[in-house]
Picture (cartoon, rainbow, N blue to C red):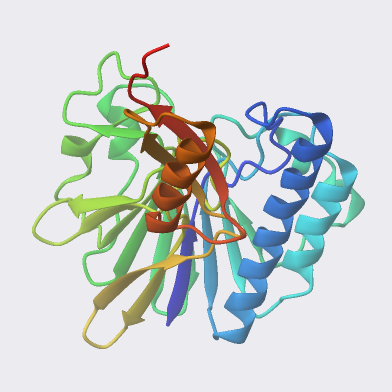
Length: 288
């Protein structure tokens, strides 16, 4: 079984890092198309489920176009189960009225403030919106030791989450028969051991939005062998544009042309291409 784990897509972000409204509008469109491309990839590769671990949207004022596009992606791929856990940026505007209007796709699985669980093949998928800092929240999570268990949460992991905004207490999750802790909230890919049985993982954001999110961005592809209960995790770079910051030391350059040549050499050495969004930083000192 194949499962995609993604998070922090931030559709309809204000894109304040872009200098003009037209560039911001174009970038919002690119981010929405990347979500569509990811769903197409899932259909093409036989992926059974997509886990969206929070912050699918960026703010309450989501455009009708964006909402309808996301709903179309889900409804037109009934063979893929979509598991959506709201993050701290998500609002109810995407979900409000779906049931009443009969528009909620049957393959869209949602989580609330209490722990929920769905079966997907031989895998049990748990999730809950993070709230409170007491052990009672974690005590509601009781996965079956005989099953393959995935748990979805959106927040910042910590061994001592007191005072950590959206903190997740790792100590409270150990020994709970978790095979894979699917996280969201941190925009840089990262993973580690949860306990002797399981691992935790942040896939990072699907697309970078500014120069604080440089480098490869994408999602995690899980390949689950239900017989051996082995989960193989692969990071799939998938962003339409990579964000790159390049420094060029122009110390000693005597003319503008020498500066241009130095900058061009720095860019040629950088891991970027024609589709990349690049910031060029000139460093060093010149004698005025």
